Image 1 (cartoon, rainbow, N blue to C red):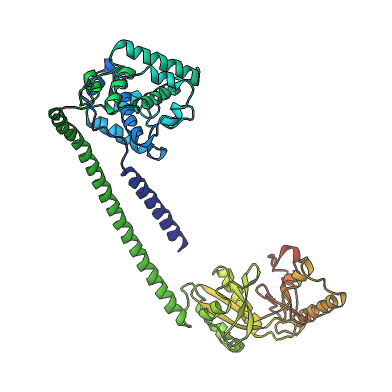
Image 2 (cartoon, helix red, strand yellow):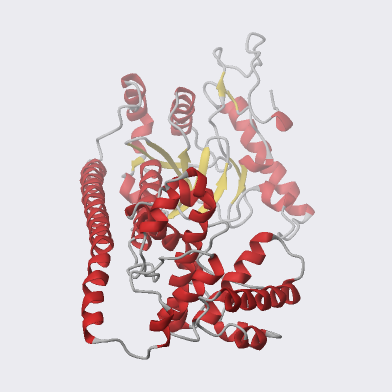
Length: 497
């Protein structure tokens, strides 16, 4: 179940990021172009021979819109979080009014013509005005700039200011700082001042729907008739942009809604599958006689349930899981699997060995150990108390050995070293166990994997031999190492046969 959950997590993360991206794109760009007259610009941008003039128009439109934005915020451009949004919005607006996308790309909308003017670390109108010798630029750029002499004087002082400020820098930096100078100057008057200055700075005319004559720049108020005639034009110019934005938002909202419904249906189906699987697991856990389809062959089950092995207690999977605290009480690991400490409801404590994988070899070792321990009874052999065969799980339940394995005491630096008396007694206990296996069992047994990790110690340091998964019984009733059995068994560093 981890793999579907992992894939689902990645899918939901992707949906979340996509929705976040769409929500950001759906936000409004603060730049306004409802004032602009795109007629001359569209004509120039449609003519390959006037591509330079087209770029000046595009630069002028963006600069005037940023100047209008700076009038209310004091910032020389939109915040960085809105840069991509505004570039997309500007490109779509220009396309809507007849300026091809190829023209905006050739002119460098984004890399060269930016929507934020950071000039040598100065990002506000106040910072530009406080820069050295900027007052000279202001003093020589008084509107109107429609006369050639006034325009040239303003541009010359602006160029001298930029050379003193940034030196011989690249053209892009020079262009950005020039636009920053324009925006700063344009904020000193009304919107008509910005349009008049743009005609001087960028060498283009007919930028605004409103008349650009110098007489109107000097006139403090306009007649009611002129205001009423201009208002419908401005209102009509804003309608296509607003309609385009509304349609774009509607498309985004519809897409997000469909995506949300699809994700909800997918989650519902996964939830139904999980509930179905969990209910089957609970039913299987409640039935102690139900085993997995990969369980023991019938002959092995019969052999494990007949004869002396019937004295073993058969545990339920739920009992094992509860006794081991959901398999968190690990006390050892080996080739067979993991060993847990278990405390059952009756207060008894045991060691539970869990098989890692259900394979033919694992099943053979599981059955062999049960069969052998059912007829082995000696004080120096670990006693088998019970077993569990349910679903895909195999468990053997042994008596609990409080002091762990001999290997822990010999090689763990945290353990107190064993005294020589204890070590000798452990050797004698193991020798007694081997003597019993070799000479008193019927038939005799050879353990074939004697090592310190298979010698366990109880609370009184009495040694007992464990792990009979590789034990071999003689076919002739006597201990003998048969020459025909040449396969290697046990741990390579502790081979006993």
